[in-house]
Every structure is written in C-alpha cells, then in structure tokens.
Image (cartoon, one colour):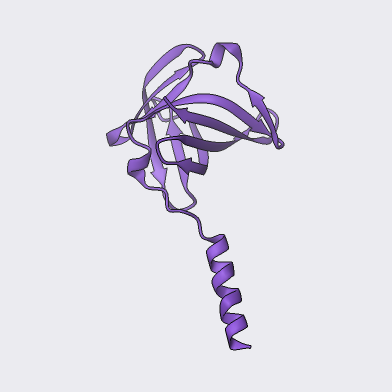
Length: 129
C-alpha cells in the first residue's frame, strides 16, 4: 500500500510540474507573430499584422512592431511566479499582462492575454525569426 501511495504522489507531482522558464530564454530573440488561438480555434493573423514581432531586450527594454508601426520605447518585466510578462507603454500608463503558456526554447513562444473587448482569453503564438 505504501508503494502504491508513493508511486501515485510521484506521478501527480511529475505530471503537474512545469518546465522552468528562464529569463535568458526570452532575451534578444525576434518573436514573429504567427497565429491566434481563441476558444480552442486556431486563427491566422490579419494581413496587416504579418510583420508584427516582439523583441524582449536586456534592461527591460522592448522593441515591437504592431500593425506595421515600430515601437522601440516600450518596457517589459518578467514575473517568474505565475510565469507572466508585463508589457508597459512608454509612459507606463498602459500595461498588458501576458501569461507564458508555452516556451519552446529558440522555437516558439505562446502568450495568453485577456481581450477586454470580447472578455475572452487569446493565445498569441510567436515563432523565432
């Protein structure tokens, strides 16, 4: 009985453990926006967003292209508890919390945000460029 209980707890601990996301794995990579997932449905990005990207730089600087417009004065912060990225505007009066739902090192980044217009969670999938 003790063996079964021990095996059960080991299995539960292993199945709920998540790979640790390292700050360094996000830095200085051009994350190109590829698609969205809303309500479990994968959707392509709009034509005017095909060149959109994020670059999380050292010293919490962030470069972003959004709707074809370059924004290089944003900032960001990594919150390891809960695996969140907070993205701030230049004046830090607007911020977007995004949860890292998946990070495949040097390959793919999935950020989940709450769209306040639709009140739905949206997963934005970025690929390394």
